[in-house]
Image 1 (spheres, rainbow, N blue to C red):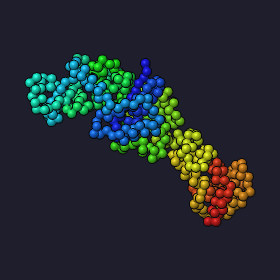
Image 2: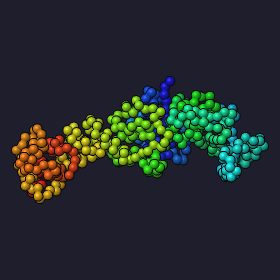
Image 3: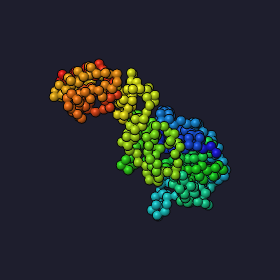
Image 4: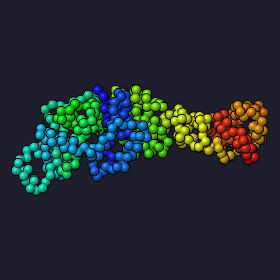
Amino acid sequence: MTIVTRFAPSPTGKLHVGNIRTALHNWLWAKRHGGRFILRLDDTDKERSREEYADSIRADLQWLGLDWDEEHRQSQRFHRYETAVDRLREMGRVYPCYETAQELDLKRKVQLSRGKPPVYDRAALALTDADFERFEKEGRQPHWRFKLDHSKPIEWQDGIRGRQHFDPALLSDPVIRREDGSWLYMLPSAVDDVDFGVTHVVRGEDHVTNTGLQIQMFEALGAPVPAFAHEALLVGSEGKLSKRLGSLGVETMREAGIEPMALIAKLARIGTSQPVEAVPTPAPLIEAFCFDTFGRAPARFDMEELEGLNARIIHQLDYDQVAGRLPAGMDRAGWEAVRPNLRTVAEAADWWHIVEGPVTVEADPADAAFLAAAVRRAETLDWSDAPWQALTATLKAETGRGGKALFLPLRRALTGRDSGPEMGPLVKLIGKDRSIARLRAASRH
Ligand code: GLU
């Protein structure tokens, strides 16, 4: 059996970390089994769906490297939903209703005040031909409900939540189509899953009840029921469903210098029993991906932790992987010299500017003689080998300085900074002439 998964965003906004995580898990599962991963745009809502959001969803998935094998749009499949609804009507599983939103609201309030669950009472099933004629004369259009089968419980083995059980009598028959003919999410999604041969539906636990209803739709359509896995929701570091998470998307990540691989490594593992690891490629994540490892508690997403993971991933990136994003002139040696100090790849440019200069040097007048000695040594030593080691060793012997008193004035003079990458490789990049000029300038402070 070919494993088929799908990611089904509505193009009514940009992706955020929560739905990126869902996309990733579907992708990982398909990859793990050599299966297919489908991008399905749930664009039945004409008012709210926008082409620019569809484009941004695709661009975000591409940036993340989550390639999809097929793309479908619900707005191009209305004929399929029509066919399905006609069949279900013939079978008596779909029926017209005429209640207004206010009437339904009132019914719910009455039920609640009597301590009853607010389940739709199926009053529309008792409508007579005379009622239908009257509604037609009045020009009223029905909305349509799917009739749940109350004869047996709805059950499934959820990949994450384990055995799930619903009593259909406690659920309202879901509205599947509005008065104006537009489709609600429920039936189109089930029809698509059947048509595209989806074998695994992986989505947030906010869809658990929908799954109960959709299982009956699959059965009514005579189709195999896919496997389901509902993941616990993502929460912010403070442990709450935060608004901020809803606005954290690829754009924010890019601005913060987060590598796609860091976001993937993080989102693949948070909320699971597996450790978050600074892996350089998705391969180990694919290989170890498994729903058994997912917990039921909300997964915590912490931007600071992601930044730490990002740095660890950057420290492993090879020059060839970043060459296109480095400043002109920065070669392999340059990258390797500054890499251990970076939190983002963009910071490499800051260090490259320091290498190339000019740097603003602030030296302590008390170090003037020491720096003048450094100039003399720097002029005579052999720059082809290990100039920093040679310079510091001779200065140590000559001045008796050690530790911070030896290294800090030199670092400041050469880079204009108090800290940074290891000086050995950096001094080689700065080179003899620039180094001597900087030491000389600092000695004159
Ligand atoms: N468009 C739905 C959503 O974003 C899809 C849910 C599903 O995966 O079936 O919530």
